[in-house]
Image 1 (cartoon, rainbow over the protein chains, first blue to last red):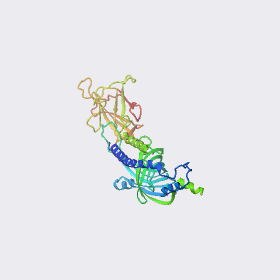
Image 2 (image 1 turned 135 degrees about the horizontal axis):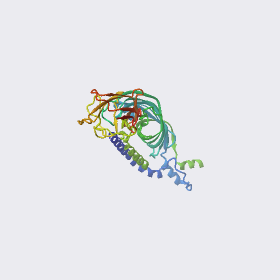
Image 3 (image 1 turned 120 degrees about the vertical axis):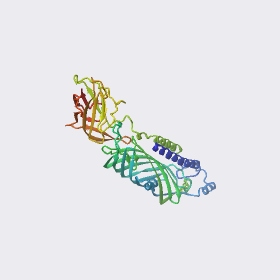
Image 4 (image 1 turned 45 degrees about the horizontal axis):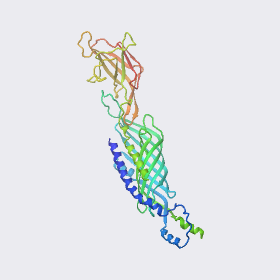
Length: 277
Length: 174
């Protein structure tokens, strides 16, 4: 019940976040039709090449540039949790590289050490993971804004070990009473798992080259090397496993954008003119 | 875009409901009990009902409860074994509490010797224990301190592996 509530409230929080941004997008949809961008198709109207054209040119004058580069950062959630949760130590480094106007190559690398204390089990999971894939920015930015609302895919791979600290034996007959947890200390090494993640995320520029981001992930296991007489109930990077192959995760990142080069988004109409001259 | 976000939210909410694996399902096969079936000594294929049988483990005050009753009147009973020891001793008292001179209480003692295997079940249930009765001395059958003769004429191990309660593990002929 405690967990259910936790998930419910965090979902509500996510909801509120998304709606705030969803409202921002509405004006830009209109702007798509009027403001020229790099992908606008060539207009068939080559009729007027007189003084009228030069007038329209002066309107287009503020040229839009897209900055390309590498964004690197860290997951604040995992970092901060390491301080307040004595059963958790973890770090996740995130990075992406802009491929073109909308697509980004994205990578997350992390290491986690988590002790899960369930009613009947207590175990420690230690391991590292890497997730690689791409993000697709569906957000149409105004002028030189660089915000991102993206959908992406990742392939995740984790290598880890589990240590069963103690466990309880389930006995529906209580004649002898419940026996105390049994200490185990059994270690399961060399475990691996891989999965696919669907990522919904957003990144907003807070100042200069610093971005704050949030992403929500739905995971599905592809492979899972289970230990003998135990189960991978937690996988670094994937988070807790449920009865099926599904899982959820999220991160809250702060990233720094390192610009490498710029590409000017030249309106199509002016391009055409230069060619003909 | 708005639609995708909404879709994701719905997905998210549906996931938050998926917490059913926090409670151990009652239908899950967990730690089994030892199933004893009583047979007629003179006609070994016929099950025989015991009258007011009480079974008390050594060191316990109360007899075990089977089907909601402390006194067993039936041809089969399931007995829990200790999870923290490799032996459990029970006092089987037939006609418990009876004052009828024709059917006076008679006590036999059986000590079960077994090996325990802890097997992982699930996150919610934790582990279960399966038992294996020792090959050479699965049990020790003796009369009570007050020698009144053994009422159990023969005791057989049917299945020495106790992994579920669907089969008889021990047969008692009387």
